[in-house]
Amino acid sequence: DKGNHRHFMQKEIYEQPVVVAQTLRAYLRRMENEVAMPDMDFDLGAVKRITIVACGTSFYAGMVAKYWFEKFARVPVDIDVASEFRYRDPVLEKGGLALFISQSGETADTLAALRHARAADQIIAVVVNVPTSSMAREADLLLPTHAGPEIGVASTKAFTCQLAVLAALAANLARAKGLLTPEEEAEIVWHLSEGPAAMNEALGHDGDIEAMAHLIAPARDVLYLGRGPDYPMALEGALKLKEISYIHAEGYAAGEMKHGPIALIDEAVPVIVIAPSGPLFEKTVSNMQEVQARGGKVVLISDAEGIALAGEGCMATIEMPKVHPLIAPLVYAVPVQLLAYHVAVAKGTDVDQPRNLAKSVTVE
Ligand code: F6R
Image (cartoon, rainbow, N blue to C red; front, side, top):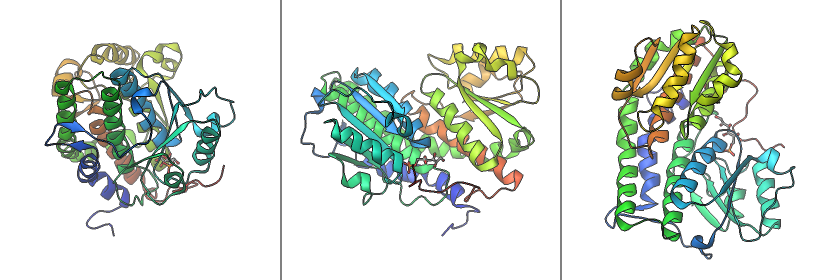
């Protein structure tokens, strides 16, 4: 039932503050100011290397998690798409943690990669939305997302719930490694708990995003730029736009622009820049200015502070609440999804059932 929404995708975008809060409840003990995980029969603190494997949007959640695992827990992370991982003969030391991320828990390549990792004596952790799925059944550590059934083919709420679980896992890992003081842990709990309200605020800008969709709808190509954890968000933005609006889009690490893609820039290629104010902001803005100097039309997604500093000269800006960097990917997912959604609606495509795509990819 779509309720009063026009599409399942729209409904699922709007459900995010509720389902992310629901998911966080399973991984945070608010009263004790602690992060929490289901019981494990292995020592999380002894994990020396993590291998993350997933496909599509779930893979981008994994890319964000790599930043968190390395930053907070100082554990080296390898990450690959399942269809590459399986065939590249990866080096997996016994006792490593292999982490699989999947909404459906049935994606054929990811499931085959899981079995490959099992055969290589890895501890198998899975982040899945379907608790009865094959991946859930084959895991040593099952970390469910509580997004509820996702009907729209383009993944939205499953993605942000994956991010919530992965942030909590990063904090648990950091604690297990002795790298978090109780004060730091309390701070992480506090920031994560702020996520749903900030996502709600982001949804409040839906009207602005809808109003600017006509700027993107006529484009043949669109670029998305971001740095750090916003780089996977750029990839996710481009994927969402491609799959439901059929506009060719690419996400790039902002600093890579000058190594090739900047040759594409002209006034016909809108560039979406994802840049919350913070430590990486200035660097990303300087890449944005390189684009503008070549006649590129920019849509800047940032907070009031970022827009005040760099919004001038942009074709449009989308304002997000000012949030802690830890929850920025959860919050910035919202405008990226809404932009793709409204562009697709403007183009009249079948948003919930885009051509050539299936909800669950059970072929290799
Ligand atoms: C994109 C999308 C796909 C899936 C991918 C993996 O919107 O939905 O890219 O993310 O097919 O599916 P799961 O997460 O079920 O393994």
